[in-house]
Amino acid sequence: MPGRSGKNRQPTIYAVAERAGVSIATVSRVLGGSSRTSERSRSVVLAAASDLGWEPASAARSLAARTYQAHGLLLGGLSGPYYADILIGYEAAAARYGQSLVVTVADGTDQGIAVRRLAARTDGIAVLASAVADEVLVELTRTHPVVVLGGAAPAGCDAVVTESTGAAAELTTHLLGHGRRALRFVGDPAGSFDGARRHEGFRQAVRVAGLRPAAPLRTGTMTEQDGRAVADRVARSSAPIDALVCANDELALAVVRRLETLGVRVPDDVAVVGWDDVTAARYLRPGLTTVRQPVFELGELGCTVLHDRIGGAPVAPDPRELPTTLVIRGSCGCREPPW
Image 1 (spheres, rainbow, N blue to C red):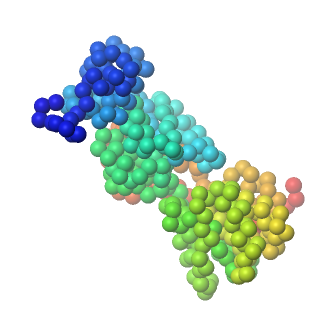
Image 2: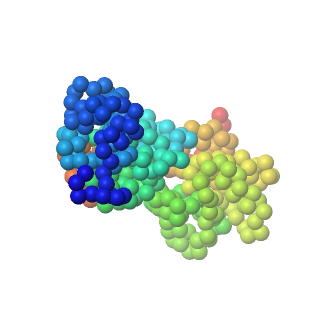
Image 3: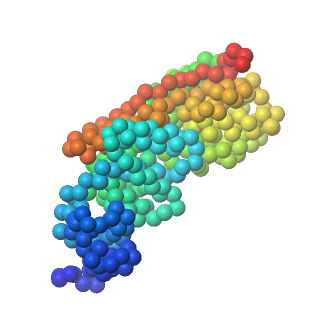
């Protein structure tokens, strides 16, 4: 292009055609907004153009005018019930709005490429918290409405979250009511928005009880493997530990199972509580005391917010927050009815 040289030169339509594996004529029709192209051709050309950063003014106008009737959902992974429930809730709401849903998993993929490919096929994007870096989201807001699910959002993005701090304080206070005094938080407060808020609620409740909060038992990914490692540390600990407040149920379930194999009784020796209320929590014996967060509804509301943003609604000044519910079972020390 005139006026550009060296590494700043914009790629030509020849480069776009080569990347997409289609003819130059097809690229020209797609970027020119012609209806005489298949959906597959349109998708591969727009993805190639985005990957190469080819955005001349005419193409930008064409892309801006196009409505795909599709939402993008960007996830950091698909393992675990949390992701599945968000996806199901989001898809249910999208169907009500007559929108299709394009899902991309950023795990192990260059974030910029994953976002550009998704943006090339959708009118707006919902992103699960921590799936991509904030700077990638800020860049995306220049062309698309963006909603962050389950975490803090950078400037220009909406956010939908579930209440954490108050519920964590209530959960911890419940353990204190059972006479527990050597409580530890299990998770990574520095690594996630929700983890930080749950840890803060834990600390608040411990301080209100006149105790000094102990350092958290930090984990990396908050998975089953981390839970087993925490249980090993607890069993070997020379310091007294009589209650564990886990940042999620996956950690808590693994902790309970591992402690029992090590001869540590739950809740007699150590009370264990979690967060999420996954299906397995009710079938554990003792049942897992936890916090039920409306993950399905989180997906639903995220879709509604993005749908409104695509329709022209402004960015909300504060996150939308959904309430959570304390679920009492036997792992905290309460008596449970028999099956």
